[in-house]
Amino acid sequence: MNFSSFDAVFFTAGFLVPGFIWSTVLSMLVPRLSAKPESRVVEFLTLSCINHGFWSWALLLIFRVGPLNEQPIWCVAALFGIVFVSPIVFGLLHARLQQIEWVARQLRRLGYRPIHSVPTAWDWKFSQGKSGWARVTLKSGSIVYGLFAEGSFAGSDPERRDLFPVATYRLLESGDWAPEEDTQGVLILADQIATIEFRNLPEDSNE
Image 1 (cartoon, rainbow, N blue to C red):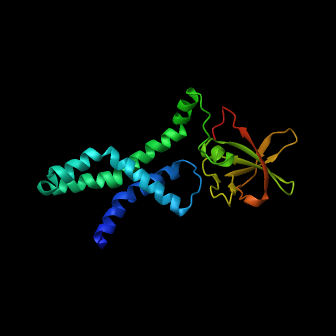
Image 2: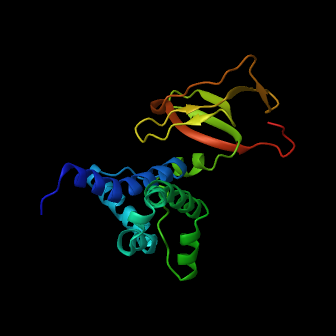
């Protein structure tokens, strides 16, 4: 079987692009294990097949029944939605199901013990997006008291787990934390971190 350049582009767009979009949306919202390029291609192909399987009835109508010649504009719009819009919706739904651990809860009800989908404790903790204080002990023995809230950052690259608390504090003799003056946060490099202790913000806090 011989394929022209147009055929190659068509099959690539049809069977890899939807899966790529789905996977990209999912990776933006849920921490995931890094995979080899060949595994990613298989993933893209699998997700694309699921997407097309859901819309198989529409594809059958477009290519077999005949509206492609009669109403080309509507058919092109439908194909655009199937290839580009539908994977975004499926990616968002997939991410939501993983965030609420719906599949894992159903498996536990059946007596199974599923492995957590989030690869590391670091990813699990910081993907929750909860505000709070963090007591970061460095390998040198120094301690950084920081606030993790809107504007803070925790690296998602497995090789660069750096931290950026949006504000820093100092420990008073009373044991309370007092904010540093004119603080703009602090960058903590990954290879300097020994442990991190998290503490909840007071319920009446406005931060």
